[in-house]
Length: 137
Length: 247
Image (cartoon, rainbow over all chains, first blue to last red; front, side, top):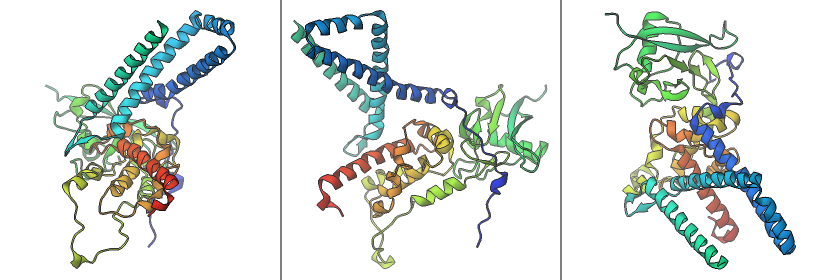
């Protein structure tokens, strides 16, 4: 039996516009999440350079950190921080979807899983901050 | 007092005379309890019998009447006019699919992909009917139940920019259904659904997540895809670390 389908020559194919990510707020937020990785990667490159300068002696390191204190670099780090925070939140949101948690026969809601992740993140951040301040003093 | 009306801007494409789709405007009576599908039926019955679109059950079960309503993929039988009134409503065929005529899209690609994930129970050896059913506990059913709710309406494909940009992508509904059978305790065919773990399967998905937002049955295909990624990764590590443990 032959299958009768639409005539391929008469189908109309629509092209996806290059601005598709501006047509829906969710798509825009998705693109921001993807873009966040660029800023995080750039920050890591700068951080690796900073560590390398540490191996070059105190003068080289001080000169490098002085460069980083210019308004342009501070702005870059501020933007990178915002992207890192956004990336982290979306990561925890994704984790709640990927790892369904059950207690006994009951499913734990995603908002609780998200809240647990954020709480753990805040606790670890505070520990790192305390360690940093303790080492500095 | 004049009866209130609402304006629908509907995509028309008649391949025998149109080179590209156009928009036709219809003014229909506004009724609080009407959905967009009722308005289309009014157009078809009273105003213009040449308008083509798909529909069947009118109750969110058949999955036939999916269209873009003001740019969002929706079942038109569940999109109430009152949620848009008094603004005009734009009705278009589902995006990411070729148009056959007016609001009717070509679903051949989806049907082919659906077959490729083998959405049925595969047994290594079938029991005879007299040996009884394949039993399952409520907890085993719960593990995949939500993914059985898919009605193949293809709204998730219209919401997925990855499918729009990369037509080879297996897509949300097909992967969710493959995952549904992989999670079914009665199924033994996971190794026959390797297509899920291929590049055009789960790894094409960048987790935009809009497929789950538009799903009228709360199937959550995005979750199925992400969980499949975890499963496939675990299986891969297991095959590397414990090759003797392969079935």
